[in-house]
Figure 1: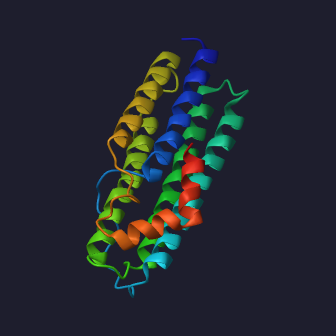
Figure 2 (figure 1 turned 180 degrees about the vertical axis):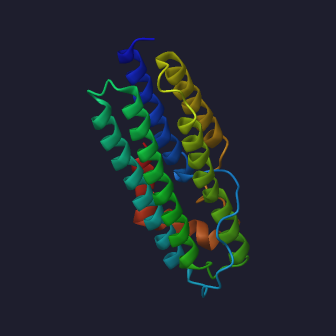
Length: 200
């Protein structure tokens, strides 16, 4: 595999990171438990929807900006060890922004609707998989051999595929929450509806 083909494969793989992120809240993942347990006061449905969607918007923006910076830094890079290190830096930033998103949503508190605590926990569990997915991706990239262009390219292509697969089966956590009041709050909030534009 030539270096130019390899670098194109890296751009495709990193684009999948953002695509995966957008598809999950179109945002995030599929099931690890989040930081539940903080006893925040319940908030009304509209406040909850705005808090969650603001956190998701900031998270997606951070990942997209990191992805753009990464792709720009790789444009003329031919040192594959540097390529690997920049990918690791991108994933470190992505993991940090994902954890911040989860913490922000946790601090929002549960919505003051029927089964609000359960709904809040299930949403955190879904979104918590994003952190796990990106941590697994970082571990995979860290283990790739940058001295072997073909192995590195193949590994990144497989990583992109596995990340996409990890997010494909995840339902949108902002839909069908088993609370008509909360579903309506998500549907009517401009920040929440703006997530669809970001994911498009």
